[in-house]
Length: 444
Image 1: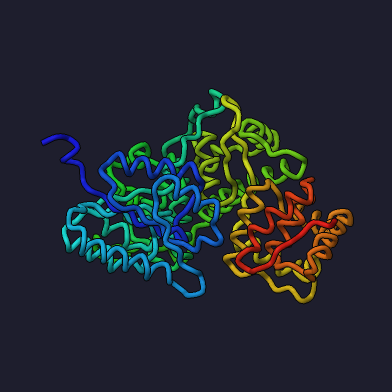
Image 2: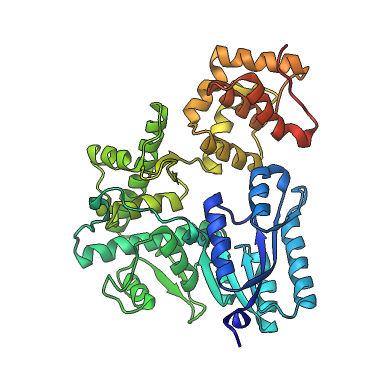
């Protein structure tokens, strides 16, 4: 029997609304999946009207795109579940199912695959993954593990800081407390297996063996003895929680960790506001000049500290365009932050008749700010500068349209503020307006 014949037949089912990253990650993940077997089917489920660029990218690397309009709650989940069950019935030669999702709605499907005797490879963002789902999988991967590696910019970035094992243990226990909070906020229960996946995702350099523990459970036992966590229930269904009263030292350490990450995001935003994003080397220098010591919050390498900030959704590391150059670091705005910003400013900046955008559009605004390398301060400036407002008003007048929704309005102001000509601005905004049946025109 040849090696090709021994490779499993794979089918990929991707819940894009639940799990997605950047193009390089998607390509790397797909290539790694293909290296493990023969892919017979590859489906990606999403509302593709709002993801045109990604649709083109995934189609180019072999995915069948299943369009699910976002008008119904969980419509994508139901459609994907139907495709999985249909495939299970009609393609018995498929021996491994790759599910790219963290949605708890797929627990029954995962159980059915397990009962059917096929392998299940689950890929997700562990932070927002339903607790029991990874335990049902034969294999589990963090979506971020497929991201291109972040090389050290300078030799000292790779050097590990020297700290006592005792100090590192306490810092790791504080990180574990954060893991419990993060999982709980998503509505899931922090099972011990799920907690370890999230711990490794948020803290890439965590290794219980380095801390002097033989096993993950030994680290949990120590953390409980030190009153950092509480374990409830018998194995393997043990759930982690926080004590009713945290020690002052624990609270202090947790606050220092959160302040360090917030400070990094603030510095990255400052760089962009000054006219250009900081590259990794510049960011490291700025943080050092401002007195931030990453080793004091539990990170032995600067590169691990930066990656951990990215996993938390505070920054985004962008690969350099020129070979040999340093990656750039951009601020990243999550939905909650944008929600608060719009609630405070929507009437002042967009007018009294405009509502705060829904979650789906807040996500698009976040992505737009990232892609155009724009901060919230710059967005506000673009929406208020007379020259930009005048150019925008002229486009609306020429198009005989009284106003645009907040996302398209923000996009138009940013593009005008970035110096794009009217034809380019109209072309890009019209791509977003086409589902609404609206079309802009430049003044003659």
